Length: 117
Image (cartoon, rainbow, N blue to C red; front, side, top):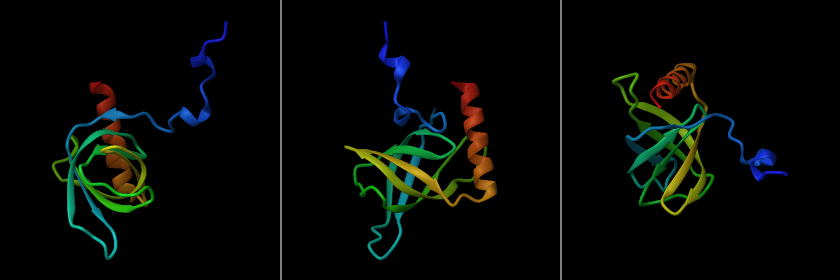
């Protein structure tokens, strides 16, 4: 008998595992229509992006600056991102143009969260 989970579509698979991360997540939109810093809460993080909840939103494809805290450093992480998904108040951001030190910090965060979950 075939089970649906055995034939999961490749579109439903993630490139990187996600790890729960609950912290303040700040987003600032690029460009002239910049409305200031929007504050929300993160839900989870992966090596390629972060998801969060915001009361104010953006369209898919909107470029943003993101800022959030992680366990492995006392300084806030600041990265560029793009809105890749949006459902109600939940937004999924993909990290873009990460510098090597940012990529290493996010990777270390994910490895640490993997041990804790």
